[in-house]
Image (cartoon, rainbow, N blue to C red; front, side, top):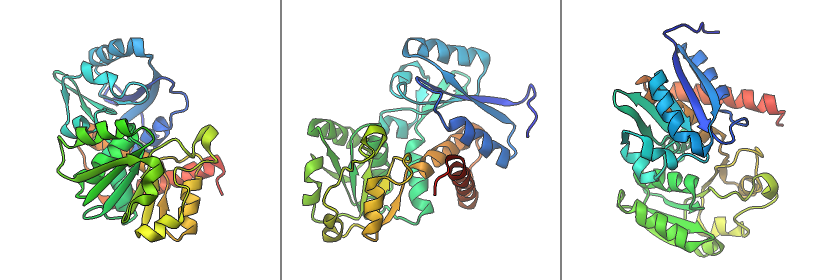
Length: 294
């Protein structure tokens, strides 16, 4: 264990609720693996106290924060600057202390890319279907566009929300996009990658999946799917894709890699791919053991 001293950098995640957060486990374990002199904690901050928390963090010299639900958009008005990628996503999940206050970043977009990279799933030149148009859908669509996707379909239950997202992203990326109802996804003639960012498969919807006609995978030529959900470890969406012979990932690696990307920003220290992969695999093994996943 590292010794905490007056020189130890301090970081935290702010959210409401926050007791369930895996970020302290991931961040502190990663710091130990890299022998970084930092400590990371979870802090419960309600919406009405968000501005005070940000100002207090600056006054106390807290080096950085992660921001989670429900503060990813609200926090933006309290920052001195926002990174271009975070502007494209329309949400911030990482803050770094500067002389003028906190600058905001979005590492979900980086985490998603690292997860695909680790599993040798190329984005450039591919047709990507994003299911859902919420925060995770925004990050994944932006990731696909920023990494050279040929076309991105945004499918959502409420088409107006998908249209608003597509219009927003068109201000930052030239990638062609098309919007449709999630019920019409199986009408798409050609697709390479499908990304689920809906809640179908999670919590009380654990027995549900956003894609009913698995025969569409073969008709459209889909080669890989990604589910932002990691609890349960294997959703119905992931199980069905694997049964069809597709490469299928859950969201745990994205969770780890967005945390790794935050440390890269905070410590001005880029991890190489081998180091990132080692960290992700060790944390995955720890998580599986802790949860008793078979």
